[in-house]
Length: 178
Ligand code: 5GP
Image 1 (cartoon, rainbow, N blue to C red):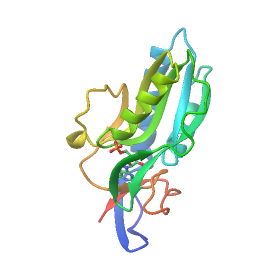
Image 2: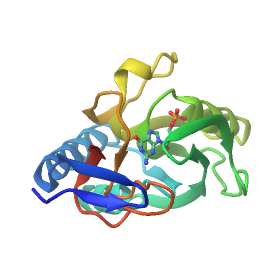
Image 3: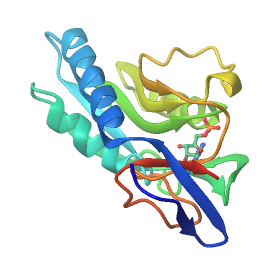
Image 4: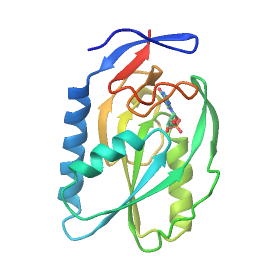
């Protein structure tokens, strides 16, 4: 594992190794394969944070699939604004598709709640959720997280796609506020 990293005014320490992340990603890919024996998943990647996870997940997924992207944001610095912004709305043709939302992290669940409502309104046949990380203590919404990788404590994390005010997305491991 690496050293402390400094991003803007804050220090972060190593939290989840590349190996732990890879194990979780591979396990999730196998679970999705098992559930999609006769259907083609439409992976909808929630940008920006899920780009790295999504890349590894779809490579580990051994069957045919579609991959599309949607932009969503709710965070400023290390705190959620509580409001989810979808700058482009749903422009993808999700009608009659079996959507699997690929999220980096679920905290309160407001992001997935907003996306679920929009996707259903846009005619998706089904929506499942795959999130690499989940902050279980903070998640109280009724929607199932069908595929979740690693449960983490209530702390701010960066790396492997996740940022702190724009920095840290390229780190190969996941770091937590020191
Ligand atoms: P929710 O809507 O579930 O409360 O929050 C989910 C979104 O907030 C994630 O997609 C991510 O953008 C952001 N988020 C939540 N927790 C963290 C965190 O610990 N670190 C970073 N970088 N983003 C987070």
